[in-house]
Each structure stands twice: as C-alpha cells, then as structure tokens.
Amino acid sequence: MQTPAVRLVRLGQVPYAELLSLQERWLRRLQAESGTKAGVLLLCEPAGPVYTAGLRGGLTSEEVARLRALGAEVRATGRGGLATFHGPGQLLCHPVLDLRPLGLRLRTHVAALEACAVRLCELQGLPFARARPPPFTGVWLGERKICAIGVRCGRHITSHGLALNCSTDLTWFEHIVPCGLVGTGVTSLSQELQRHVTVDEVIPPFLEAFKETYKCTLTSEDSPN
Image (cartoon, rainbow, N blue to C red; front, top):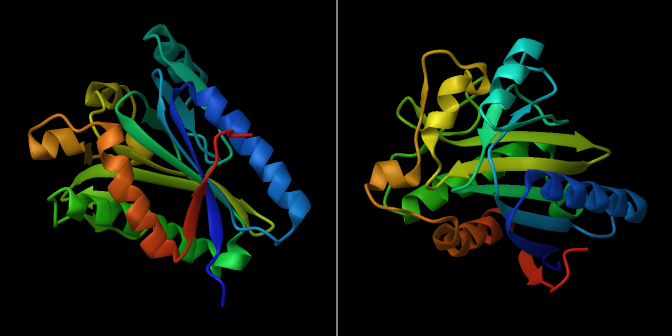
C-alpha cells in the first residue's frame, strides 16, 4: 500500500489571519477533491499576539474589549474548545487533512497530534510530557500545559490543530483562563529547559515525529497556494 503524501507548507512568522486564510483555501480544495489527496500541513509562528475563542466560546464581550485594549487581536474560530492565546515564540501546526487516505478518525487524529507533541518534548529532553483525557486535551508537564490542541472536522476533513509554546511570552495567558481550565498553569520549552528555544529549532524534530505518527511522507513546494 502506497504511503500517503502530505504537502508541507512552512509560512515562517506571519499574521494569524494569513494562516486562517490559507487554511480555508486548502479546506475548499480538499472538499472539491473528495478523498483523493491526504492534504497539507501548515506550519507557522504568529507574528503578533492573538486570543482565539473556540466553538464553545470562552470570552464575553467585556473580556474581548479588555484583551483588545492590551494590544492583542481577538478572533472567534471554528475549532473545538474555549479560549487560548497565540503569539510569537509559538509553533502553530494546522494539518488540513482528509482523514480517509490516512486511515484515521477524528479521535485518532487528535491522539496523533498529542503524540507528535509528546515525542517532540521527549526529543528536546523532557521525557515526562504526557497527553491527558478530556477536558484536559493537550500535552502537559505535571499541571502545566505546554501544548494546546483544538480541531475542526467536517466531511472527514480536519483543520486547526496544535499550538506548542517554545519561547512564548507566557504572561499573555494570565489575562484569560486558558481552555477554561481553572487551577492549571502553562509552560514552554524555554521555561522547562532554562534556555531559549526557537520555533525554527523545533520544526525539524516535529516533522520527524509527524511523519512517524501519521505514517506519511511530506513533500515541500515553494508556493503555499
């Protein structure tokens, strides 16, 4: 059986809106092709601070106004979950995938994203990273979340994905209850390893973990369109 090929698009540091726009274009393309291609892996680092709310909300109109007053963008998204933060120093991974060629369902796709983040942490020298069951979806080091996961799936096609803190300014999280989980904290690779860890540093091991977990190949092209 032929190994599914997923296209890899590395956007670098871009506005969050640019990632969403490209994601929507790929969603429409995969929906039109209907099961003939596995899809695309979109990677980027957000260029500025942005708070996002999921399908279950998580931010009142007063909170939105307060967060915008801090200088952050606030966006409603179609992913699962509640409110979280994205910003510089964070790896955003949005796999826009048709799960059928990959032999996956939504639950196993979420588990695969968690496995990729756990493996990356292990490769960076953090062997105690663990995924936890809902409502604690994501990857944790003790009671500190290092990777948030929220996806959308319709007609077997996924979008959104994971956000892994590399050298993120964690003080941005203090203005919300991340993912609606009271009493838990957030952390980053830089904080745990006590050195500056860039997004660019972690992309190669993350891609190896992705190929291993999803049992696919990755093909790169110059144009993201």
